Amino acid sequence: MRLFWRHGYEGVSIGDLTKAIGIAPPSLYSAFGSKAGLYQEALNRYEGSTISLDAGLVASAVTLAEAVRRLLETAVRSVTHPDRERGCMVSSGMIACHPDHAALARDLAARRDAMRERIAQALQPFADAEEGRRLARHLVAVMQGISIQARDGAAPAELQEIVEDVVVGVTARSSR
Image (tube, rainbow, N blue to C red; front, side, top):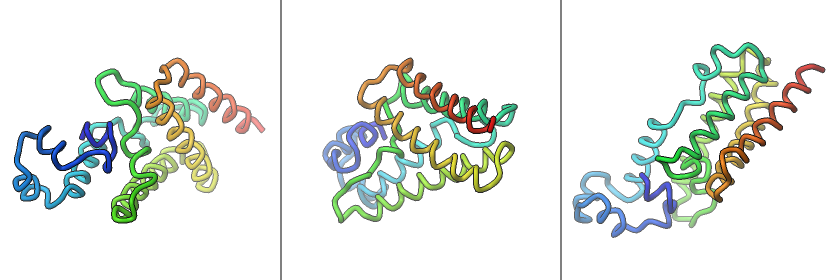
């Protein structure tokens, strides 16, 4: 998982994977079917190991701004955690790839869509369905930017400034 997270799907060879796992290529193929199969298993493990951005995270929020703050601050902690790779494996994965890997790219796009939908559902107590979907799309774009900036070395305090700016905007919009 960490190899794919650090270098992307196309940046990791079968040799890199078998060396890291400590198995021969035939064993890798027997266990996962292909490099793509191992990548999908790594994505599943990654998603299972990250903080879920769902209704539970914002359940005790009283306002939309507080819910947005919790989502974004959780994202910042997740992409800058010192014991993990920087950035989000799903947000930055396979944005551009060789045409042979289009199916994997579609899988990642579907995972990003599912994350956006979970966020929209989490915002339902604070916004109607249309507003929740619009805001979720905006928040996912912000979170993807935070992920990329984290990979580029931005400090958590710098990313927190982005959170503060978004919360100010959400507060201003909701007070109209």
